[in-house]
Length: 270
Figure 1 (cartoon, one colour):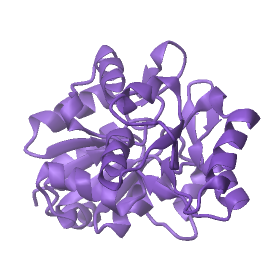
Figure 2 (cartoon, one colour):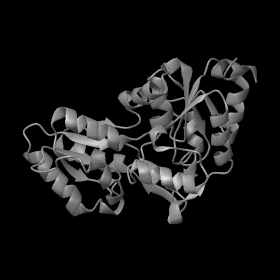
Figure 3 (cartoon, one colour):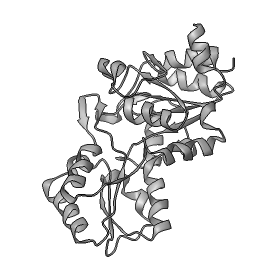
């Protein structure tokens, strides 16, 4: 236990991944992971600041929050850092008009964005809309641009639904990068700007926060590169091989969010 006390000393805030940590998505909205509803409630009752940091790009922030509240979680929209609103800000700042290769569920986030005569491509986890036709259309547009810009909401390889593992946006992003000979700009984890915006919303420095996620690269590695500590839960997309990852070593591995919260509430203020 002394090791945990040292690893979690001085933590004043917690960043929580959503999918694979709070719940597994799937038919009928998905199912909460055992103990996670109560774990979030306990965090909220503690002195720790809490922020939800997700790469969810099939649902708008509002839709995601409504789903989580239905599942019993205490969460509001202004506590969530998500990639679509961050991408909209970038588009407006840079005068970019996107061709959208996205899931219909997240389209409302782009309602205020000019999509006429596109000069970039924005891609997200489009699910079944990742058809050859749609991928090829995005490819053709990028190839016609003098300075092609590809913005991807996250770059996850896969995630877990109740029915099993699902291919994520990163695989399709890599296909377009390879075909066009370009590099995508990633909005979302593991991009440092994304973590920094979440920290800013909490009013904390990186060394005062801990990230809890199921993705060894996107959640754990991304947070650590930002100067945060990070715990990996053995739920969601976790694989036993993650504990021997060649490049990323979590500050701790826990069975689930409930166990992480137990440890945090015991040691964070020491």
